[in-house]
Each structure stands twice: as C-alpha cells, then as structure tokens.
Length: 109
Image (cartoon, rainbow, N blue to C red; front, side, top):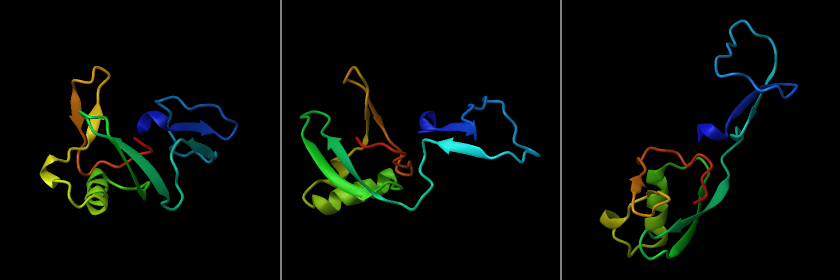
C-alpha cells in the first residue's frame, strides 16, 4: 500500500508530499515497494467466521482475482459464489471486500 512507500534523497532525507521533480538531476531512493521481478509469496487466509486458515503461494504481483483462482485450484470443492476476499475490521463485525483488480501490494494475510 502507498503508506509503506517512502521517497527520499540519496542521503536519506525524506521528501515532502509537495516535492516537485521537474528539472531535477538528483538521484532519489524509493523504499517500501519492490521493483524487481515477481517472486513467490505465501499468503495466510482466515475464514471470517470459523478462523480456519489456509496457506497458498502466489506471485507478489497477484491481483485479488488471481488469488481467488489460486484458492479454487488448490481447493476445488470450495464454492466460488461463497468465496469472498477482503479485510476484517478490528471490531470483527465489519467486512470490507477487496476489488478483483486490486493488487496484493505486500499483504501476506
């Protein structure tokens, strides 16, 4: 997620939100997001009601839709229509579904 990304000058000085790069020749450092080739990452998914867990391996560049397909491939008896991927709020009563096109963005759960 964007909150994990920091942009800084080469000496480590963090840039302000309003920083402009036009006409700049200085090198910048980007921290918090991988720019290399995709790599395998293990996800731990929890059932919203029972707490049962499943682990799957997907590329770190996967979308929610691709994660859904990987789950259904690993667990072919699961019902696609009942498989919802999202985030559970701290109060455990609110479920926020993730859009199918949303990327994993460093999440592991």
